[in-house]
Image: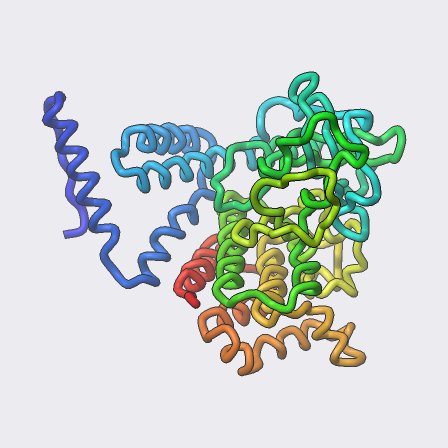
Length: 417
């Protein structure tokens, strides 16, 4: 028996109780099964969202919102809230979010070179004055968009800023947006103004110290973390990998491609209360490694990097940067980040250990993923996920990237340490 259909001919408290009991029994039944298959069921609920359009999106949004408000089980209510957010995000991704983003001028910020998040200056922390009202000061993250002067680029940036500001499930590991920074007249640049975690952006001392932002509020990216720390417990690395895969999977489920997944675009912010702003001892920072954030949305890798030397880019894009971007390329890039977590060393260092390999870096990365030492260090499940992602370097298309992501996320969910 696969399906039962009931017809209710009257309303009232009894019917409501019956429906509640059926929902409860259904949720209990959902929990029976093998762990891997249950993970596939739970993570696969988003896989068909990219097929919804127009009225279908409105109907599902109404249904999921209603279920989130009426479900007696807190876990189920949370799942329905996430589904409602994903449907809404899908609508924004294909139709465009309504309205226009808030536009800031350069005078709204205090920033210096000391607040650069990366050495290339593509992102920086900054003090944001008088927002949302006069006297309210906070900390923001600015990501500069490449080629902002190109015709049509501004509208593209505005649409992405609105999309970043749409409600999203926490599992997407993305920072919300305040709006955009228009500095075209002075520096010929546009930037996304993003919201760091609440402990970073609020609770500034009064009066503000001369430096405005202590180094204790500065994030660290995954590349910097690997280069400056001897290592992390395997369980912590598993957790980071799971969250990155979940985030990319959910982006792809709403037909959204990131286009720039790199270790320098994966950020970790300091944990807990920041404390005394007068101290600039960055060494005192303790980072929240349980909450990686994927950034870098304004910088399609093709905009500012020589792709022929970009180890994280799919081979097809390295050969022809002008070809249309596919979600498949995100998955390959993610597959190049995961072995860095597994081996706790950068791909760049592995390539440089093989002289003359720059033009054939894909072969080196593929060979790296096939080494038996990978299984011994992180286990066969994690190693096989890495291999499957990197093997995408030999493909030019993928039927359903969201389902591929579900498979990866479900398998990684079985990794414990």
